Length: 238
Ligand SMILES: [Zn+2]
Image (tube, rainbow, N blue to C red; front, side):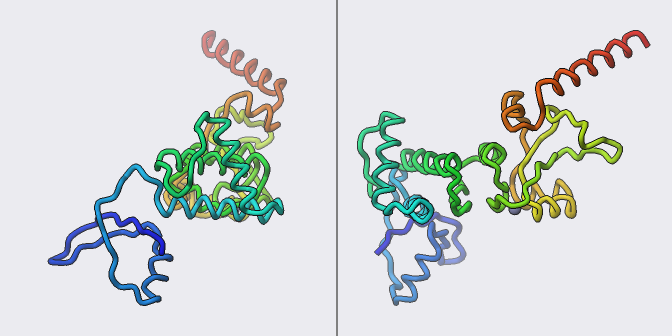
């Protein structure tokens, strides 16, 4: 049987409420007729059930996509991770929570790098929103749903009506990659409601990233810089 982690929520009268780390698995136990569970203070430093579940879900997605056996995927990724980080061999049954978090991040970045589709839910509480927005921009997938179809780069700070979309200095805007559906939603419900709903904001990219994404050429950047210089001089002389 799986071990669950319960997080104290509140006491109501003589009843105590807990949040369980893996509700679906917990319900499964209830359906099997298990109504009593042992609880003891948790060792906060150990890998949690939810973390382990995320890791195996990723292994499965990678295995489905690449055709390698799950065990093979696991062995290779663990080896690569140990090599990159300098950690020795570790076990997913009893490593620390911190190591598990780092390993999940590593596997997610691996999926982004090799364009391997995976359930984007594994990023919750693991990859911070800003990093996720960045990875989705660089590796071209929708920040909300992970889709690779009909992608558009959204400017969170709306480009005004009068502005020519072809004449935008992307360096001044917070950007995010969205599919057609979520881009439409952004404009339908507005930037604020969108950010409240999906919990991320666009990010400003470095010049280098903008160039490598081919959002702008160096020449366009130079032209904008010239324009700003002229404007500044005009203002000074005006
Ligand atoms: Zn989408």
